[in-house]
Picture 1 (spheres, helix red, strand yellow):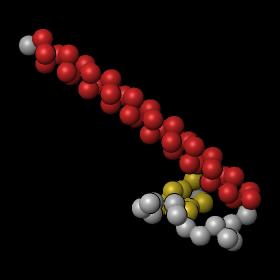
Picture 2 (cartoon, rainbow, N blue to C red; picture 1 turned 90 degrees about the horizontal axis):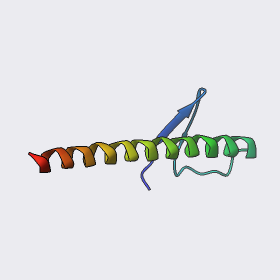
Picture 3 (tube, rainbow, N blue to C red; picture 1 turned 60 degrees about the vertical axis):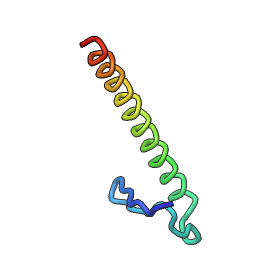
Picture 4 (tube, rainbow, N blue to C red; picture 1 turned 30 degrees about the horizontal axis):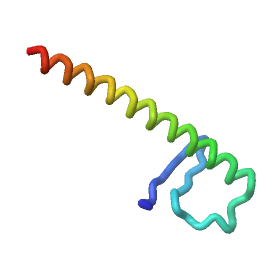
Length: 62
């Protein structure tokens, strides 16, 4: 997996980094950040699919 920087509330981390020295509290916060990012990406995908469907419909009619 590519390393991606994620930040929230001044806390930064990299996807794929070693988790040995990371506390349970920090891991829980990272999981919340990742879940929020997953939801944001899923919303973007849904929006883009809606736009694509509208465009395909428009250009099929013309």
